[in-house]
Length: 99
Image (tube, rainbow, N blue to C red; front, side):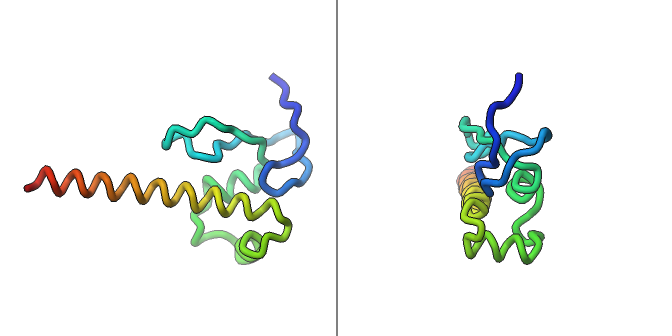
């Protein structure tokens, strides 16, 4: 199926022939909304840990230049928070089971 989107939802740069669709809320947290993303933004959000982001990408995301890159940061932080919440719930349940 051909995608009819022409810009990345995160950085608003033109999409190439090769691009991906990213779940803003990760699928592992029941996310359903998928948005068109360039390969760089998809990698920054899902494949590269925040601590390993290139300094220029992190600075642009924090300063919102270009504005769309801040969306990648927000989505990344959301995914981290959801994972942390799940981990805390798991630990809490494990501690209750140990008592």
